[in-house]
Amino acid sequence: MFSRKEAVPFAFVAEADHFRSNVTPPPRERLGASQIVGRTLLGLTVVAGLVGSLIFGMPSLQSGDSATRHQQSEASDNR
Image 1 (cartoon, one colour):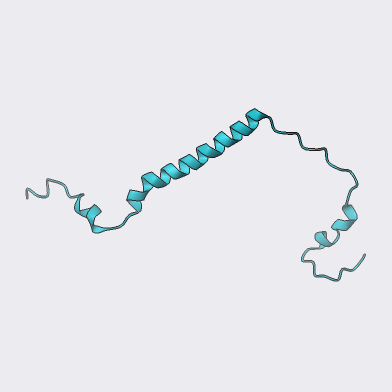
Image 2: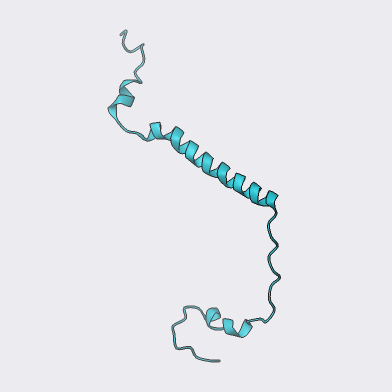
């Protein structure tokens, strides 16, 4: 075995040099226009859902006495 000068937390990281390969992976295929548009629409849909849930959820996140004052029923006023 060989010794390293710097500290290595795991043994498999220290021995990774032994398993290097000279085989290069194939080049990535270019994305088609429909795949780019599909991924963009999916991303926009996710972002729009998050923004919409934030907008519709904001009133329930606000705290204050005005929300509890308006929730009294009319039946309690007649007693």
